[in-house]
Length: 401
Image 1 (cartoon, helix red, strand yellow):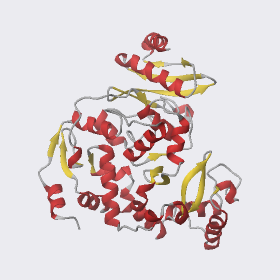
Image 2 (cartoon, helix red, strand yellow; image 1 turned 45 degrees about the vertical axis):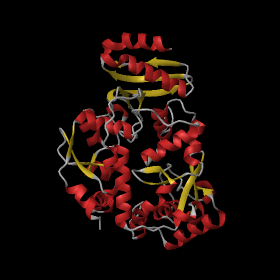
Image 3 (cartoon, one colour; image 1 turned 120 degrees about the vertical axis):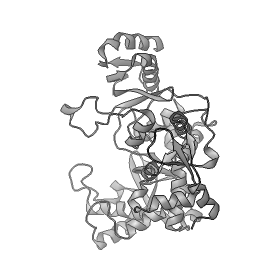
Image 4 (cartoon, helix red, strand yellow; image 1 turned 180 degrees about the vertical axis):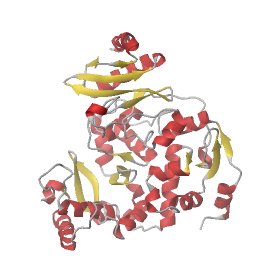
Protein backbone atom coordinates (compact mmCIF):
# COMPACT_ATOMS: atom_id res chain seq x y z
CA UNK A 1 0.00 0.00 0.00
CA UNK A 2 1.28 3.53 -0.71
CA UNK A 3 2.25 5.67 2.26
CA UNK A 4 -0.05 8.45 3.47
CA UNK A 5 2.22 11.14 2.05
CA UNK A 6 2.19 9.47 -1.36
CA UNK A 7 -1.57 9.06 -1.36
CA UNK A 8 -2.01 12.69 -0.37
CA UNK A 9 0.31 13.82 -3.18
CA UNK A 10 -1.81 12.04 -5.76
CA UNK A 11 -5.14 13.24 -4.38
CA UNK A 12 -4.16 16.89 -3.75
CA UNK A 13 -5.48 19.67 -5.95
CA UNK A 14 -3.58 19.46 -9.25
CA UNK A 15 -0.94 21.93 -10.27
CA UNK A 16 -1.63 23.69 -13.57
CA UNK A 17 0.76 23.81 -16.53
CA UNK A 18 0.32 25.41 -19.91
CA UNK A 19 0.43 23.19 -22.98
CA UNK A 20 3.74 24.82 -23.92
CA UNK A 21 5.24 24.04 -20.51
CA UNK A 22 4.17 20.40 -20.84
CA UNK A 23 5.78 20.24 -24.28
CA UNK A 24 9.07 21.62 -23.00
CA UNK A 25 9.06 19.22 -20.04
CA UNK A 26 8.59 16.35 -22.49
CA UNK A 27 11.42 17.50 -24.76
CA UNK A 28 13.82 17.88 -21.84
CA UNK A 29 12.87 14.48 -20.43
CA UNK A 30 13.55 12.93 -23.83
CA UNK A 31 16.98 14.54 -24.13
CA UNK A 32 15.92 16.89 -26.93
CA UNK A 33 16.06 20.18 -25.05
CA UNK A 34 19.05 21.43 -23.10
CA UNK A 35 22.65 20.28 -22.90
CA UNK A 36 23.19 16.64 -23.70
CA UNK A 37 25.37 14.24 -21.70
CA UNK A 38 29.12 14.83 -21.80
CA UNK A 39 31.98 12.38 -22.05
CA UNK A 40 32.95 9.49 -24.27
CA UNK A 41 30.50 8.60 -27.04
CA UNK A 42 29.45 5.21 -25.69
CA UNK A 43 28.89 6.72 -22.24
CA UNK A 44 26.72 9.44 -23.74
CA UNK A 45 24.59 6.78 -25.47
CA UNK A 46 24.41 4.81 -22.23
CA UNK A 47 23.24 7.93 -20.36
CA UNK A 48 20.60 8.46 -23.05
CA UNK A 49 19.36 4.87 -22.64
CA UNK A 50 19.12 5.30 -18.88
CA UNK A 51 17.18 8.53 -19.39
CA UNK A 52 14.67 7.01 -21.83
CA UNK A 53 14.38 3.69 -20.00
CA UNK A 54 13.83 1.79 -23.26
CA UNK A 55 14.83 2.14 -26.91
CA UNK A 56 12.68 0.26 -29.38
CA UNK A 57 14.29 -2.22 -31.76
CA UNK A 58 13.08 -2.92 -35.26
CA UNK A 59 14.28 -5.08 -38.13
CA UNK A 60 13.76 -2.32 -40.73
CA UNK A 61 16.89 -0.46 -41.75
CA UNK A 62 16.63 2.55 -44.07
CA UNK A 63 19.37 5.06 -43.21
CA UNK A 64 20.18 2.97 -40.15
CA UNK A 65 18.27 0.81 -37.72
CA UNK A 66 15.79 2.50 -35.42
CA UNK A 67 17.82 2.11 -32.22
CA UNK A 68 20.76 3.85 -33.92
CA UNK A 69 18.57 6.67 -35.20
CA UNK A 70 17.20 7.31 -31.70
CA UNK A 71 20.74 7.97 -30.49
CA UNK A 72 21.56 10.10 -33.53
CA UNK A 73 18.43 12.21 -33.02
CA UNK A 74 19.56 13.17 -29.52
CA UNK A 75 23.35 13.12 -29.70
CA UNK A 76 24.14 13.99 -33.30
CA UNK A 77 26.96 12.30 -35.16
CA UNK A 78 27.92 9.87 -32.40
CA UNK A 79 29.74 6.93 -33.95
CA UNK A 80 27.59 3.94 -34.77
CA UNK A 81 30.16 1.63 -33.15
CA UNK A 82 29.72 3.59 -29.91
CA UNK A 83 25.95 3.11 -30.14
CA UNK A 84 26.33 -0.65 -30.48
CA UNK A 85 28.88 -0.79 -27.65
CA UNK A 86 26.54 1.13 -25.34
CA UNK A 87 23.64 -1.20 -26.08
CA UNK A 88 25.39 -4.56 -26.32
CA UNK A 89 28.46 -4.02 -24.15
CA UNK A 90 27.04 -5.57 -21.00
CA UNK A 91 24.88 -2.82 -19.53
CA UNK A 92 21.53 -3.67 -21.12
CA UNK A 93 19.19 -6.49 -22.07
CA UNK A 94 16.38 -6.99 -24.55
CA UNK A 95 12.80 -7.31 -23.44
CA UNK A 96 9.21 -6.53 -24.35
CA UNK A 97 9.15 -3.08 -22.76
CA UNK A 98 7.23 -0.79 -25.12
CA UNK A 99 7.75 -3.33 -27.86
CA UNK A 100 10.96 -5.32 -28.42
CA UNK A 101 13.38 -2.92 -26.77
CA UNK A 102 16.86 -2.56 -25.35
CA UNK A 103 16.56 -1.73 -21.65
CA UNK A 104 19.16 -0.83 -18.97
CA UNK A 105 20.14 -3.98 -17.12
CA UNK A 106 19.34 -2.27 -13.80
CA UNK A 107 15.67 -2.45 -14.84
CA UNK A 108 15.65 -6.27 -14.88
CA UNK A 109 13.82 -6.64 -11.52
CA UNK A 110 10.97 -4.32 -12.55
CA UNK A 111 9.85 -6.56 -15.41
CA UNK A 112 9.17 -9.42 -12.98
CA UNK A 113 5.40 -8.85 -13.22
CA UNK A 114 5.55 -9.19 -17.01
CA UNK A 115 7.67 -12.34 -16.71
CA UNK A 116 5.16 -13.85 -14.29
CA UNK A 117 2.38 -13.12 -16.78
CA UNK A 118 4.14 -15.14 -19.46
CA UNK A 119 4.95 -17.95 -17.02
CA UNK A 120 1.27 -18.07 -16.12
CA UNK A 121 0.42 -19.07 -19.68
CA UNK A 122 0.42 -16.00 -21.93
CA UNK A 123 1.99 -17.11 -25.21
CA UNK A 124 3.99 -14.84 -27.49
CA UNK A 125 3.09 -16.81 -30.62
CA UNK A 126 -0.43 -18.13 -30.15
CA UNK A 127 -0.50 -21.83 -29.39
CA UNK A 128 1.81 -23.13 -26.65
CA UNK A 129 4.90 -25.08 -27.67
CA UNK A 130 5.13 -28.74 -26.73
CA UNK A 131 6.87 -29.24 -23.40
CA UNK A 132 9.49 -31.50 -25.02
CA UNK A 133 10.47 -28.73 -27.45
CA UNK A 134 10.63 -26.22 -24.61
CA UNK A 135 12.94 -28.51 -22.63
CA UNK A 136 15.12 -29.03 -25.70
CA UNK A 137 15.47 -25.29 -26.31
CA UNK A 138 16.39 -24.64 -22.68
CA UNK A 139 18.89 -27.52 -22.66
CA UNK A 140 20.62 -26.22 -25.80
CA UNK A 141 20.98 -22.74 -24.35
CA UNK A 142 22.19 -24.16 -21.02
CA UNK A 143 24.72 -26.56 -22.54
CA UNK A 144 25.85 -24.66 -25.65
CA UNK A 145 25.11 -21.01 -24.90
CA UNK A 146 25.51 -18.17 -25.36
CA UNK A 147 24.29 -18.84 -28.89
CA UNK A 148 22.40 -17.20 -31.74
CA UNK A 149 19.23 -18.45 -33.40
CA UNK A 150 21.30 -20.01 -36.18
CA UNK A 151 23.49 -21.78 -33.62
CA UNK A 152 20.39 -22.91 -31.75
CA UNK A 153 19.33 -24.74 -34.93
CA UNK A 154 16.03 -25.37 -36.74
CA UNK A 155 14.72 -21.86 -36.14
CA UNK A 156 12.76 -21.45 -39.38
CA UNK A 157 10.24 -23.59 -41.18
CA UNK A 158 11.79 -22.59 -44.50
CA UNK A 159 9.60 -19.55 -45.25
CA UNK A 160 10.02 -15.85 -44.43
CA UNK A 161 11.98 -14.65 -41.39
CA UNK A 162 8.87 -14.56 -39.20
CA UNK A 163 7.95 -18.17 -40.08
CA UNK A 164 9.43 -19.48 -36.83
CA UNK A 165 9.96 -23.14 -36.05
CA UNK A 166 8.71 -24.60 -32.73
CA UNK A 167 12.28 -24.39 -31.38
CA UNK A 168 12.53 -20.67 -32.14
CA UNK A 169 9.08 -20.05 -30.64
CA UNK A 170 10.16 -21.96 -27.53
CA UNK A 171 13.33 -19.94 -26.96
CA UNK A 172 11.42 -16.66 -27.49
CA UNK A 173 8.84 -17.81 -24.93
CA UNK A 174 11.67 -18.61 -22.53
CA UNK A 175 13.02 -15.11 -23.17
CA UNK A 176 9.64 -13.59 -22.29
CA UNK A 177 9.43 -15.70 -19.13
CA UNK A 178 12.93 -14.72 -18.00
CA UNK A 179 14.48 -18.18 -18.14
CA UNK A 180 16.62 -16.97 -21.04
CA UNK A 181 18.04 -13.49 -21.58
CA UNK A 182 19.62 -11.57 -24.43
CA UNK A 183 22.30 -9.08 -23.41
CA UNK A 184 24.16 -8.86 -26.70
CA UNK A 185 23.77 -9.35 -30.43
CA UNK A 186 26.04 -10.65 -33.16
CA UNK A 187 25.25 -8.63 -36.22
CA UNK A 188 21.48 -8.41 -35.99
CA UNK A 189 21.06 -11.81 -34.32
CA UNK A 190 20.02 -12.15 -30.71
CA UNK A 191 22.42 -14.10 -28.54
CA UNK A 192 20.55 -16.28 -26.05
CA UNK A 193 21.93 -17.31 -22.67
CA UNK A 194 20.52 -18.46 -19.37
CA UNK A 195 19.27 -15.42 -17.50
CA UNK A 196 21.01 -16.74 -14.38
CA UNK A 197 24.33 -16.43 -16.25
CA UNK A 198 23.67 -13.27 -18.27
CA UNK A 199 22.07 -11.01 -15.65
CA UNK A 200 24.16 -9.80 -12.67
CA UNK A 201 23.40 -11.98 -9.66
CA UNK A 202 22.25 -9.13 -7.42
CA UNK A 203 19.64 -8.14 -10.02
CA UNK A 204 18.62 -11.66 -11.00
CA UNK A 205 17.93 -12.56 -7.37
CA UNK A 206 15.35 -9.81 -6.92
CA UNK A 207 11.68 -10.72 -7.25
CA UNK A 208 9.61 -7.58 -6.56
CA UNK A 209 5.84 -7.70 -6.17
CA UNK A 210 3.43 -6.63 -8.89
CA UNK A 211 2.83 -3.36 -7.04
CA UNK A 212 6.55 -2.64 -6.78
CA UNK A 213 7.00 -3.37 -10.49
CA UNK A 214 4.08 -1.11 -11.39
CA UNK A 215 5.44 1.70 -9.21
CA UNK A 216 8.94 1.49 -10.68
CA UNK A 217 7.79 1.34 -14.31
CA UNK A 218 5.19 4.09 -13.89
CA UNK A 219 7.84 6.28 -12.26
CA UNK A 220 10.31 5.51 -15.07
CA UNK A 221 7.72 6.25 -17.75
CA UNK A 222 6.75 9.54 -16.12
CA UNK A 223 10.41 10.49 -15.77
CA UNK A 224 10.94 9.82 -19.49
CA UNK A 225 7.95 12.00 -20.42
CA UNK A 226 8.11 14.82 -17.89
CA UNK A 227 4.35 15.03 -17.51
CA UNK A 228 1.94 12.34 -18.68
CA UNK A 229 -1.62 11.08 -18.43
CA UNK A 230 -2.42 7.61 -17.14
CA UNK A 231 -2.88 6.47 -20.75
CA UNK A 232 0.55 7.86 -21.68
CA UNK A 233 2.15 6.11 -18.72
CA UNK A 234 0.41 2.83 -19.47
CA UNK A 235 1.57 2.85 -23.09
CA UNK A 236 5.24 3.59 -22.39
CA UNK A 237 6.01 0.09 -21.06
CA UNK A 238 2.70 -1.43 -22.24
CA UNK A 239 1.58 -1.86 -18.64
CA UNK A 240 -2.10 -2.00 -19.52
CA UNK A 241 -1.53 -5.59 -20.67
CA UNK A 242 -0.97 -6.51 -17.02
CA UNK A 243 -4.55 -5.56 -16.20
CA UNK A 244 -6.73 -2.44 -15.80
CA UNK A 245 -5.61 -1.77 -12.22
CA UNK A 246 -1.86 -1.84 -12.87
CA UNK A 247 -1.38 1.79 -13.93
CA UNK A 248 -3.56 3.37 -11.19
CA UNK A 249 -1.79 1.17 -8.63
CA UNK A 250 1.63 2.14 -9.99
CA UNK A 251 0.84 5.87 -10.09
CA UNK A 252 -0.31 5.81 -6.47
CA UNK A 253 2.63 3.72 -5.26
CA UNK A 254 5.18 5.86 -7.15
CA UNK A 255 4.12 9.05 -5.36
CA UNK A 256 3.46 11.03 -8.55
CA UNK A 257 1.64 14.35 -8.23
CA UNK A 258 -1.48 15.23 -10.19
CA UNK A 259 -1.10 17.98 -12.81
CA UNK A 260 -3.61 19.78 -14.98
CA UNK A 261 -2.36 20.74 -18.44
CA UNK A 262 -4.32 23.40 -20.26
CA UNK A 263 -6.14 21.86 -23.20
CA UNK A 264 -5.71 18.27 -21.98
CA UNK A 265 -8.93 16.43 -21.19
CA UNK A 266 -7.43 14.05 -18.62
CA UNK A 267 -5.46 14.66 -15.44
CA UNK A 268 -1.72 14.14 -15.87
CA UNK A 269 1.03 13.16 -13.43
CA UNK A 270 4.62 14.17 -12.80
CA UNK A 271 7.51 13.70 -10.40
CA UNK A 272 7.48 16.57 -7.89
CA UNK A 273 11.23 17.09 -8.45
CA UNK A 274 10.84 17.37 -12.24
CA UNK A 275 8.36 20.23 -12.45
CA UNK A 276 10.88 23.02 -12.97
CA UNK A 277 9.98 23.99 -16.52
CA UNK A 278 12.98 24.86 -18.74
CA UNK A 279 12.64 28.41 -20.07
CA UNK A 280 15.36 28.03 -22.67
CA UNK A 281 17.97 25.58 -23.88
CA UNK A 282 19.54 23.97 -26.90
CA UNK A 283 16.92 22.53 -29.26
CA UNK A 284 17.91 19.70 -31.55
CA UNK A 285 17.08 20.05 -35.23
CA UNK A 286 16.88 16.45 -36.38
CA UNK A 287 14.95 13.69 -38.09
CA UNK A 288 13.17 11.17 -35.87
CA UNK A 289 12.68 7.48 -36.70
CA UNK A 290 9.06 6.24 -36.75
CA UNK A 291 9.69 4.20 -33.59
CA UNK A 292 11.18 7.02 -31.51
CA UNK A 293 9.83 7.30 -27.96
CA UNK A 294 9.01 10.98 -28.58
CA UNK A 295 6.26 9.84 -30.96
CA UNK A 296 5.45 6.30 -29.72
CA UNK A 297 1.93 7.05 -28.57
CA UNK A 298 0.09 8.81 -31.41
CA UNK A 299 -2.69 10.32 -29.23
CA UNK A 300 0.00 11.93 -27.05
CA UNK A 301 1.93 13.20 -30.09
CA UNK A 302 -1.18 14.91 -31.46
CA UNK A 303 -2.07 16.33 -28.04
CA UNK A 304 1.39 17.82 -27.45
CA UNK A 305 2.53 18.79 -30.94
CA UNK A 306 -0.74 19.15 -32.84
CA UNK A 307 0.82 16.87 -35.42
CA UNK A 308 0.09 13.32 -36.52
CA UNK A 309 3.25 11.73 -37.95
CA UNK A 310 2.43 9.58 -40.98
CA UNK A 311 3.09 5.87 -40.53
CA UNK A 312 2.81 3.96 -43.80
CA UNK A 313 5.33 1.18 -43.24
CA UNK A 314 2.58 -1.41 -43.34
CA UNK A 315 0.50 0.23 -46.07
CA UNK A 316 0.74 -1.30 -49.57
CA UNK A 317 3.08 0.79 -51.75
CA UNK A 318 0.32 1.82 -54.16
CA UNK A 319 -1.71 3.34 -51.32
CA UNK A 320 1.07 5.35 -49.64
CA UNK A 321 0.82 9.11 -49.61
CA UNK A 322 3.94 10.10 -47.69
CA UNK A 323 6.30 7.17 -48.30
CA UNK A 324 7.63 4.00 -46.73
CA UNK A 325 9.77 5.28 -43.83
CA UNK A 326 8.51 8.76 -43.08
CA UNK A 327 10.73 10.55 -40.56
CA UNK A 328 9.31 13.65 -38.81
CA UNK A 329 11.43 16.80 -38.62
CA UNK A 330 11.95 18.16 -35.11
CA UNK A 331 12.97 21.81 -35.11
CA UNK A 332 12.64 24.47 -32.43
CA UNK A 333 10.93 21.94 -30.17
CA UNK A 334 8.10 21.30 -32.63
CA UNK A 335 7.34 18.75 -35.32
CA UNK A 336 7.64 20.70 -38.57
CA UNK A 337 7.23 18.25 -41.45
CA UNK A 338 8.54 14.90 -42.57
CA UNK A 339 10.64 13.15 -45.18
CA UNK A 340 10.77 9.66 -46.67
CA UNK A 341 14.52 8.97 -47.04
CA UNK A 342 16.47 6.27 -48.81
CA UNK A 343 20.09 5.66 -49.63
CA UNK A 344 21.56 5.04 -53.05
CA UNK A 345 25.31 4.58 -52.87
CA UNK A 346 26.74 7.73 -51.32
CA UNK A 347 23.58 9.76 -51.91
CA UNK A 348 20.79 10.28 -49.42
CA UNK A 349 17.62 10.39 -51.50
CA UNK A 350 14.70 12.36 -50.07
CA UNK A 351 11.92 10.62 -51.95
CA UNK A 352 9.22 12.87 -50.61
CA UNK A 353 9.58 15.95 -48.41
CA UNK A 354 6.67 17.71 -46.71
CA UNK A 355 7.66 21.04 -45.18
CA UNK A 356 6.39 24.54 -44.39
CA UNK A 357 8.11 27.56 -45.91
CA UNK A 358 9.46 28.72 -42.53
CA UNK A 359 11.12 25.35 -41.96
CA UNK A 360 12.90 24.79 -45.27
CA UNK A 361 16.32 25.70 -43.84
CA UNK A 362 15.80 23.39 -40.86
CA UNK A 363 14.82 20.51 -43.16
CA UNK A 364 17.92 21.10 -45.29
CA UNK A 365 20.17 21.13 -42.21
CA UNK A 366 18.61 17.93 -40.86
CA UNK A 367 18.99 16.15 -44.22
CA UNK A 368 22.60 17.24 -44.54
CA UNK A 369 23.49 16.09 -41.01
CA UNK A 370 21.78 12.72 -41.53
CA UNK A 371 23.55 12.23 -44.85
CA UNK A 372 26.95 12.92 -43.31
CA UNK A 373 26.27 10.56 -40.41
CA UNK A 374 25.47 7.59 -42.68
CA UNK A 375 28.44 8.25 -44.95
CA UNK A 376 26.68 10.03 -47.81
CA UNK A 377 28.21 13.08 -49.46
CA UNK A 378 25.16 14.27 -51.39
CA UNK A 379 21.42 14.77 -50.91
CA UNK A 380 18.99 14.35 -53.82
CA UNK A 381 15.35 15.44 -53.53
CA UNK A 382 12.72 13.70 -55.65
CA UNK A 383 9.53 15.54 -54.68
CA UNK A 384 8.39 18.28 -52.31
CA UNK A 385 5.01 19.21 -50.84
CA UNK A 386 4.06 21.91 -51.57
CA UNK A 387 5.87 21.79 -54.96
CA UNK A 388 6.43 25.57 -54.92
CA UNK A 389 9.01 25.11 -52.16
CA UNK A 390 11.28 22.86 -54.26
CA UNK A 391 13.59 25.72 -55.40
CA UNK A 392 13.90 27.01 -51.84
CA UNK A 393 14.80 23.56 -50.51
CA UNK A 394 17.35 23.00 -53.28
CA UNK A 395 18.94 26.37 -52.47
CA UNK A 396 19.02 25.59 -48.73
CA UNK A 397 20.69 22.25 -49.41
CA UNK A 398 23.36 23.93 -51.53
CA UNK A 399 23.96 26.38 -48.69
CA UNK A 400 24.71 23.60 -46.17
CA UNK A 401 26.59 21.29 -48.57
